[in-house]
Amino acid sequence: MQTIDQLPQHYTEQQVSALLGISLKKLRKDRWKREGLPYCKIGRCVRYPADVVQAWLEAHTVVPEEAP
Figure 1 (cartoon, rainbow, N blue to C red):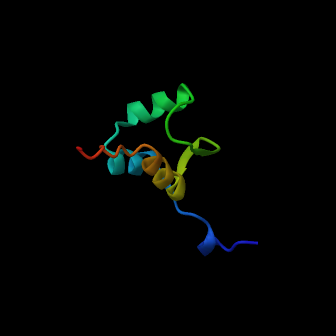
Figure 2 (tube, rainbow, N blue to C red):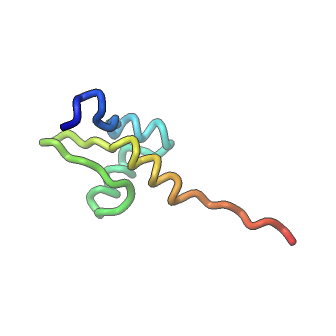
């Protein structure tokens, strides 16, 4: 069993909005459409696991090709 110190950190929607530069309205619309970042819902509280946010960013990173 994990202790509270071993659990992954979770961000609020406000923190994710500020971190990624995405509006709260966009985050909420994406959740409603079941798109965008994976999230956890605890009652009415929405939380984004930090490791999931990082993995999502890495999966959506565009690396330009080198010129020949």
